[in-house]
Image 1 (cartoon, rainbow, N blue to C red):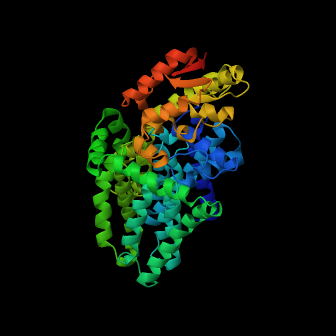
Image 2: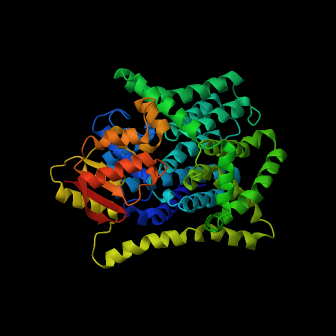
Image 3: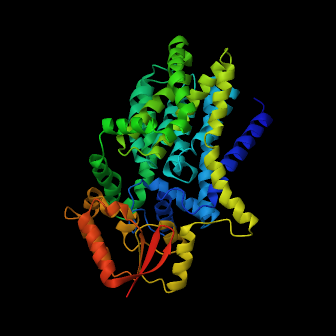
Length: 499
């Protein structure tokens, strides 16, 4: 393909990606986790190591991405969403290049479009969530392995990229393990280096990011903090989650819910029909070409296992599968367009783009109405809470945010304690035990926070994460009744002030 044609295609992909994600720049909260991520990123910019002053379960590279986004584009929610847009664009273009190698330019363009539109089917996928960030190195790893002759340096880069993905989404460690066990075997590649050279190259690439993440903790004498965040807490989390079978059953149940099924129907059809064709093509082609089809299949299967092993069956976790699903689906569509099924396939392809249009159009409505009314384009309770607290709390007296972390960041204040960086973490006793010892419970953690006597408490009307902890819920109710009065309701939140 000529360079000018490739540049034009990149510009088209960029414009489509921007138009799909642009209305979500203005909304305050797309996914609640974004609030935690920006707090952790801001803490890095303030000169602290991840997990030292604030704490969350995710790996450190994710927070470094948010720190870089804030540093480069500014401290605003649209700036954070712009960082998410850049990740989505980078992933879409890498997916284009991967599918192009498998099925040609047409397949590449279809794969990019499939990712762009399908990634926004989940409410969270339109924001800057960890899955959108992680698919960039995942897609890069797929690209470097999509060669007829894969050398040891390609395995080094693959190990490097997959390790970077693991430092964004820790569940992808299963992908690192599966890729290291299957792909270097040489079954799908023309040997250009010995087996051990491939293994060592892959392992060396994987070690580099981990060492770079670990060195700052060694220099600060806080090695234990790193091991707690990267080993102890994740193991406690993993051991407390539903089994792989239970997670699979829950995903299957979710698949047949009307909203989910109608939205993902085109993808499901292409995967169901395309996977057998894909596997058949692997069997039929010469060994030299097997890598072009085997790599997405192996990485996709490993990612599916990693999602099931990560526990809760959240819809946005499936975004991690999209790079590989997009390549397989685009390959199927491209092949089917050469058959008598062309009209059906064209209709199915149009459905890919129509399915998320309702959500996108709905997101544009408040933005356009505010623009026509001459109002600020950004909107949502997080902005209102921040403005109100800035007015009634000019001295930045202690505030306990039981949600609305974005407001906390907009105000430029820190969480009342590191355990409250993600407010719901106090209900996850298995995590709190990793931080505060075996006596930690939800009521223990809540009592410790309330002893700090926050002047304001920002509380959801219903604190969902305390519903399974009646002692903690009762403690909160008693404290609010004895020492606080509600002073303002904003959206789903109630602001309390101490007498």
